[in-house]
Amino acid sequence: MKYVNADFIFPEELLKEVQKYIHDGLVYIPKPYGSRKKWGENSGSRIYFNQRNEEIRQQYAVGVTMDQLSDRYCLSYDSIKKIIYSKK
Image (spheres, rainbow, N blue to C red):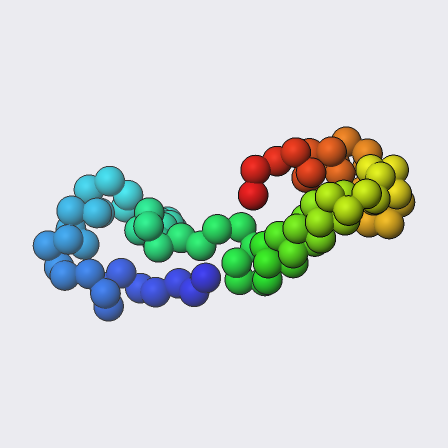
């Protein structure tokens, strides 16, 4: 996140209005609600874990036990159980 001087981006009237609430310091302005990305979308983690979880569900469907999946994916038995029984 980079910092920008408010003098350069805000109209004078808006800057004076903001200065009524904060005289000196930093103000964080978040992105609009609908434009935020979900967890893992930038790094690709979301795709990786969705694919891994789908593989786990498919392997369980063809007869691989939860204990075997737990060992194969280095996850706890409870984590495997949550993945299998969770909605996609």
